[in-house]
Image 1 (cartoon, protein in one colour):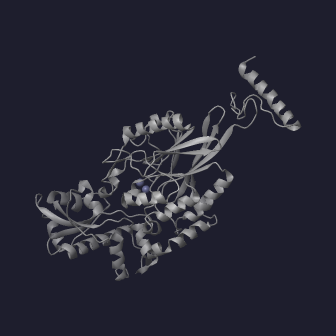
Image 2 (cartoon, rainbow, N blue to C red; image 1 turned 120 degrees about the horizontal axis):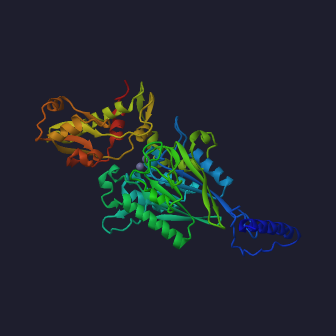
Image 3 (cartoon, helix red, strand yellow; image 1 turned 90 degrees about the vertical axis):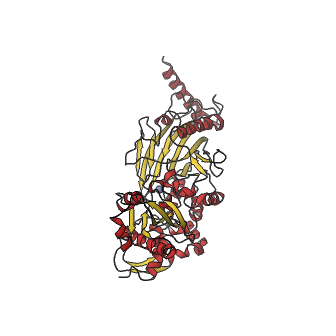
Length: 503
Ligand SMILES: [Zn+2]
Ligand SMILES: [Zn+2]
């Protein structure tokens, strides 16, 4: 008789015996002493016939970008709250994690420097949050303040302090959670996105990327297994594929990690939605960002023989939850922070027509120029104002009333106004003749006279914001900085208050 068959017959006899003994008296241990065996991998202990499979669910958000309240086009976090509550009722072995860029991008979130979003994450029970590049938008101080507020750790195995050459203190490499006897480890890492952060916000730190990051993750995976008995490892990375398909061969993920180091990968940063297995069968998931859905994976672990599997992995779209009843948690938080966020409700004026993102950015370039001339025009001949200008969802303004919060959503970044000098050749290449469609500039007659007569070696003066001034390829030298916190949205708000968009 073959061994497998023998075992199965034995298991059957034992199972029958267990049934009989259960019916007629206290259940007796049948030789496994609680150390279950499942050599035939049928999901039941070969001796005591107990179920040895644990099912657990992962839900992840990435790039929520502070989208707290409902808008015309997307649900807020209230429906998400209800959805996660229901998920946990269905399966208590539910893990909620975040893969970065959670705070930046809405009036409620920004006016509280991420505090309200962090508290919401506490309320719904996130177990970890990997830091994204935008978590640095208000500097490390804001991260540290939120870290002390959070009931869960901030993860980034690869953010290092320049001075000490050690991992920064406000980040952990991983977190371990226990799910009905199964130990799950989550390792977090910041992606290769140092250059997308304003340099003055990250001058004290550096990110290990590429092979260095891969080695860190491998070492942490080995440590988790050896020292903490971790059986299932999730990698939560603020980086991802650049198209709907996952392109592992690019720098952000080494396929060698899929050979025994990680069991599931949640990604972020590139705002592309996908759920795909890589060449080794490890699933990679990302949502499109700005609260447009949830990534989900269901997994199973056999506590007797260590076999594990991801049973399902998918992207859950908003239509699966946006009609759910609201949760009271969200209203409680809005009430708690109402003084801080009330600025977002201020009505600034009206616009009779829809205003495109391009239109608004042209206006801001003009306002930069005018403010710059007001501040420094008596000392410098200023050629133009503007620069690289990023806009965020919902990007444009509908006709009707305009609230400060509307502008906050489109232009959330806190970049100061800067007077810079620039060499003629660079002015020509980077500003007058750039083919980057995110550059917006404004100039009047003086700039117009310069435009076609640039002396390549002469020094000129322009007004940009601190993101553009510190962006190395622009080759700008800072001459003076306006220290008042007056950002693009504030200049635009003042313009609207004065009736600038009313006709
Ligand atoms: Zn993002
Ligand atoms: Zn990002």
